[in-house]
Length: 574
Image (cartoon, rainbow, N blue to C red; front, side, top):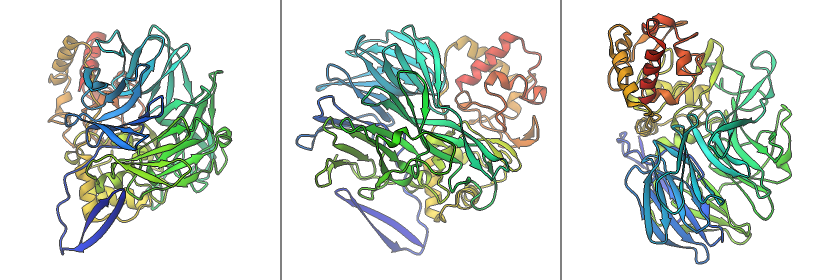
């Protein structure tokens, strides 16, 4: 058998293969799921701030000398994400795993607790507030210079980016790709959604199927003030359990990448699909030309889209927006892009821990000084297959896209991978995949038309995925949680008969509504709507209503409205 080694010299990856005669154990899992958008250039264009969630570190580079001037080592598991600068030159970084906001003022560092999983950041000049959007649903506003939050409002789960607008804020949702308009009081006053378009689709036998916006990886503001979202569209094609069965018509995949632009008229404009752009995890606009740079993590490339091409409408036809493709130093997938005011482009490569600079002159790089990192499992998870899909296309951030898919045997909701995947075999709703090997072979290699996976890669994938946490629970009313827990554990409701153990599942099969399916884990259940195998319940309350199986799915018909609310509050906290 073979063992793979990689050595990084500067920003170039050199690999060699040594025959050892046996499969070695995989190295410790390295890195976290790609999220994009972890790099920002200061307003004067002289510095770039790189938040490194893989190494739990923030690095500041002087772009005039192209040297590192500050490295901030963070506690293990902090997972720094989005970074912004305020009007006083302070740097703010969302710490996704530790739930904090890091504020950097010269040599001073301040950490403030925010929420369970902070994601998006924006600084508002008129109030000098930093607004933080959380995956757990909170929108937190706090003084840029320090101090406790001045406002915490709960919007809804799965918040992503924050943008400051004249009339207030716009907060995006991750899996549903919506833009929530929020007024000065923190109230949602409207929703902007990219139009659902149609695709020619002979797989479904209908001639066309809906292309629904989903997974808003990155939303930002263009130089002219319009908002732009880089997101995916989920096609309503019928998927088949055959080789290449997850492909769609027109030579594409069941998931495509797209852009939505919103101007002052607040009317979302759907741009034609981006060709060859799986996992568009980050986007930046050239302040000089207005052209776009888009990170296609699935292709380990950056795509350049002209300003004119951005206005190509989505007419539901085959084809889409073409782009110039830049691969770079062959050191894994880039994760972030940012422009200097003069139009120079910076691209961050986390595996090499280096920045590529494209400014019209010779291509060059800046090493940030960290040890190179690579994980075969993480690379496999984000790698585009011949079908145009990566695992992360349907399981963004190694969790789920909230999608309900049409299969030739019925509708199935994407299952969440976060939270101890190796302890949750057998896999799939029908438990037809007894092992990870069966899952990788049947789904990645066959249905997604991927390359054969080496045993060491497969083992690395399981090792890496097993570290991904489930969505965070939320605690709003501790008394209600305690009452709900008592109901959950009672013999009368019987919830514990199936949802038991550390992961709240016995991994067995049960018939609660519409067939025999595997009992899912309830860890993080509040953050992974919709529910049931076919996604019929849009909320947890719906699961106890019209489609949850009634008393076949736990005996709950005797519960009062208050008791049911307590039970739901408890489930939201898991």
